[in-house]
Length: 157
Image (cartoon, rainbow, N blue to C red; front, side):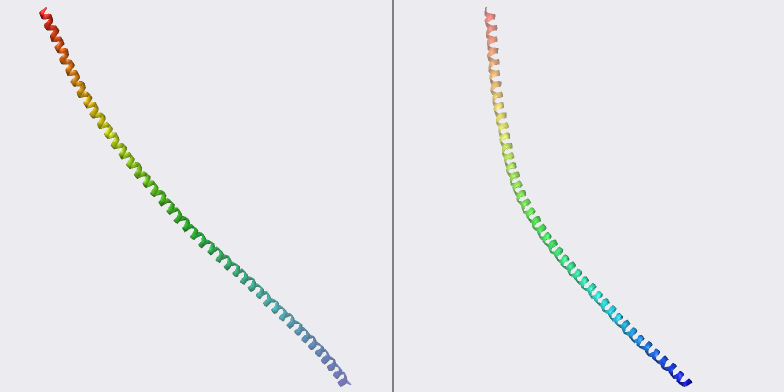
């Protein structure tokens, strides 16, 4: 009987151990499922982050390319504006040089005309002075003769 009780106790312990083993197997299976699900979720999160980073990188590359194109276009436009300004300035400089040359020629011509007018005026004044001196000398002679004649006429009277 002791053996039988003992046998029953062993069977009960065995049943309990089997039940515990099954519980452990279910717990291990549940934990394995949770771990696999957590790993899958983590891998999905990593894929999502990598995908978002790749999209951001693609957007940044596109933005950089667009800005580079705009910068290059602005540089080309600036070079064209500079060339246009240089051409315009060169044309204006040429016009100003032509105007200066024409004004210089006109000034030289006017200077020669003035110098000629001064020479003509000096010559005319010199001629007039000579004529006036001649006239003054003639009038002096005439006056002297008149005075001489008067003095002689007085002396005779």
